[in-house]
Image 1 (tube, rainbow, N blue to C red):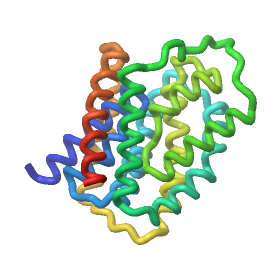
Image 2: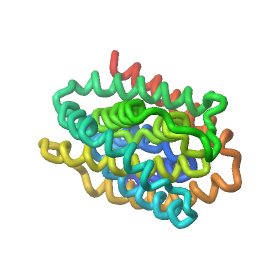
Image 3: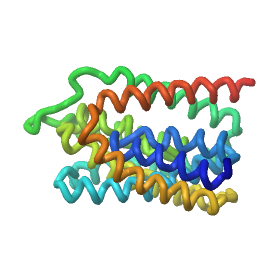
Image 4: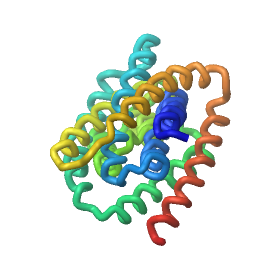
Length: 251
């Protein structure tokens, strides 16, 4: 199977996850780039940010048309993560490949478990009171650091955080999470591009194009299939990927 075909298939899967669930796609993009397309961990996490930004923009437009984006709330939440994302993005360039792989695998475990066993009661009514400004800022900063360090959008963390911490109803959480993902990923990418990283655009371009198309299909799929069922499927895949990456990192 040629690299082009692999990139198209992997990109479509990433897009389905981002479009249907608002997260999880970038956690699949990094291992796909490393193990299927031969990228180094540093190059894969940088390329994943590019892919996530382009794909999330597509999803954001779709959700915004339906009025499912809380612009002010998402903007404030994302603003708290700007500096941490940029700093973490710069620091990641100095981390050994095996440590970056192990850290990413650990995050994939968290993502997989969250998708398989979502926390009960995360939805919030429209009239729910948000948490204190300090807690909102702290949560946004933490998510920004994760985005910068590991090159993931963090949608699987952003969605529940928006619901539980900022009291965004679930109907708007996915669309708003895409706004947060775009801002944090852009900040992280800006610092990463200042470091000497070789990117294979012949692979990244078709991967991104397939992910964008997949995001539209993912949104349509989410309207027809139970979100819980989609989460479990992606959760099992993420756990399998995480185990493989951990074994590879310590071997």
